[in-house]
Image (cartoon, rainbow, N blue to C red; front, side, top):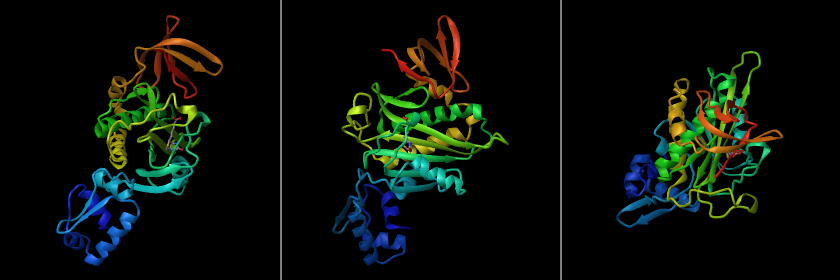
Length: 315
Ligand code: BTN
């Protein structure tokens, strides 16, 4: 075991150099060397004579070891990179190379973070959580992909609640809002065979504004972060990954839809629908079993399913 793995498992507690050496099967000198290198990488490790070494509870360095220590499930392959173009794009390449389901790619920063509809996703270093999950859903029908988007939103909403205590809302289909401003966007992309109508892979890309205190001018009025809470991103990543895969395993049962409806900020609200060059007001009645939005428009029921539709909640 690496020294960092052991320190991660014992966050906030002092471990003697001797114990670390024994546990990791290395010499005391080698322990000291690894601790020195970790400190140089920015890890907050306290050293006290007679007590040993302690990794600070609030040390927020995103690392594979930190995430794995909260995940407690070795079947996940967690890859952490300091900088990528887009975690979705890089994971797509890995998917094409044959990487399996449950591979998760996380980056400290993205130079070409992507949002929906060709938009970019603001991805500054150290402030956010940018992660993509690789799925190989053999049974998923293309018409049910919206369910995966809804499931992702549930996992983010519940992960945020568990780790930060903050109550966020889900705006159809998978934006996460805190006090009326967006804190997380999700971009699902996939490759589907025309012959078999089966997915080769799906990438679920999740971008969360965690510690940001400012935003660029163009998104200042609509973006927020989770900075009012004190938490570390590794714990949040692990919570979301665990919640996502728990519901994903029972996707056909659609158990998560009740959670989705409960935390939806659109059900029962008046909205403005934007569809191509058309726009109209409507009332949201419910979300159906496919994740589609059921609306009342001019006294008639209609179902909205397309990702090309934008809605604005009226205040
Ligand atoms: C949106 O709100 O339009 C979706 C934003 C999705 C952003 C995430 S960050 C991780 C992953 N990699 C990307 O390039 N995009 C997604």
